[in-house]
Image 1: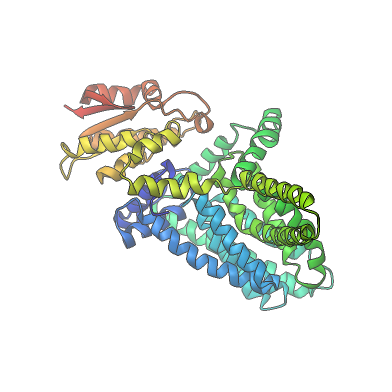
Image 2: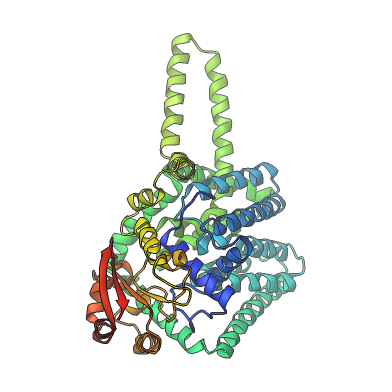
Length: 509
C-alpha cells in the first residue's frame, strides 16, 4: 500500500487536511467539499505524523488497519464464539481491502471500520445486559463519529438500533430502553457539540447551505424515478457489487448466510446483527445512488464473517470430495480431479484474487522498477491527469516564489499538494461552485477573495467534466466561460501562457 499513488479523492483530502490541521482552516468556513469534516482531520494528522508525502496517508492507513484488525478479531471471537471464523474474517478483510486498489483505499468508508466495530461491540454488550446505558452512550458517540465521516454512515447505528428493537421479548425491556436512551443521548450530544463548534467558528450557515447543496445533488437521480430503479438499482448497483466483492465471494457468502441458521440456536444472535449491518449498508448505498467500488467497502466488515463461515464449509466439502476420489478408479480420479481443478480455477478467476496482480503487485513493481507511474495512473483512470499535474507542478516551482499563490479552477487538487500551496478562497475544487443550485453567496465569496488578493497564477482545467455531480457535460473551462464575472476577472488581470496538458495557465499582469 505504501506504493499506491494518490487518487483524486486522496489528493483533495490531503490538501484540505493540511489546511485544517497545519493552518487552522475550518471546513465549510474556509473551504468547501461534499464530504463531512472528519476525513480531513484524519489526513491532516497523517501529514503531521509522517510528513508531506503521498505515502503518509498509506502509512497511517496501515497502522489504522493493524489496530482495527486486532479489534475485529477480538470482537468477533467474543460475540461469535468462534476463533476460526474471527481469524478468517481478519484475513479476508485485509485481502478485500488491500486489493481494492489505490483509488478505493483511504476513503471515508475506510476509516468507518473502527467506529463501526466499536459500536457493534458496545451494542452486543448491551444486548447481553452489560451496562446498557453506558454502552448505548458509547454506541451513540461512535455513531456521531460515523456521521461526521459520511452522512449515510448513520445506517450503522440505525442497524444496531433495529437489532435491539427486534430482540426477542424475553430480553429485559429496561435494558433495551436504557440502550436506546443512551444511543440517542450520545448521538445527539456529540453532533450537537459539533454544531456548537460550527457556530463558534462562523461556519454554521455555510454548513446548512452545504446540506441543501447535497440534497439537490442527490436529486440528479431521483430516488424512485424509473431511470434510477431500472438503470441504477437493477444494472449499475449489481455490477458494482460484483466488481467490489467478486461473484465467487458473493456465492460463498450466500452459503455462509444459509449455514448460519444453525449457529443462531446455540452461538450468538450476533449473526442477525451482522446481517442487518450488511443489509442496511447496501440500502445506504442505494440511497446514495453513486456506485463506485469504494462505496461498497463500508460493508466489508459485516460481509467477511459470513464469507468465512461459507468458505470453511466449502473447504470441508472439498476435503471430503478429495477423500472420496482416492477410493475410485484411475479414470474416475482423473475426471474427478479435472473437474475439481477446473472448478477451483473458475472460482479464483471470478474472485478478487486477480486484483493482487493489478493493484498491490502492480504498483509496487511500478515504483521499484522506476517506470513512469504518472503515465500508469492516467492509463488506469479516465479524466484524471496525474502525470500532467506533476509536469505542471515542476514548471510552476521554477517561477513561483514562497509568498506567491495560485488558484485552480478544476478538480486536480493534487496540484496544490505538489506545489505546497493552498487555496486562498473557499474553492478547493470547483465542484460545489458549478451546479445550478450553487448558492450565489459562495460564488461571491470566491470572487471577492480573488479580487482582494489576485493570485500570481490562475489555472483552469479542461476535459474534466463530472456529469454525475454537476448534472451537465461542461468541463471546468466551459463553466468558467459561463460565469461572466470570473471570466472578466481573468481577462482583466491575467495573460495566458502556453497550455500544459489539460491545464490553461494564466499569469498575473
